[in-house]
Image (cartoon, rainbow, N blue to C red; front, side):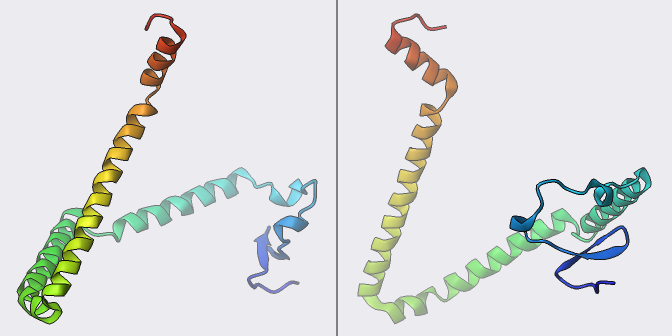
Length: 141
């Protein structure tokens, strides 16, 4: 009997060695892979119990939202309270550098919005069809 470890799997109650994917045979032995209807039902029942227990332990979604908003509010409050000491620490030159970096990031985000909008319009099937029909000279539908 082969012992249970990370290189074995249990098939029909017996641990059998795993083969790497590149060593799989061309034809599979279906006798070990077939399962009875009772095995399928048991597997479905275990899956349903597992999924329902996952949902049960997640907690109240409204409470999680309130806790998340509260955590963000506390973090924002702490950052704003410490802003005077941060400005004193980094000085005028540091503030200018941070301002330029933030402006650059805002510009990048704006350009990304524009690119996503243009791609959304350009890849719309109705618009592509009308452009293709106009280029071919046929009337639009």
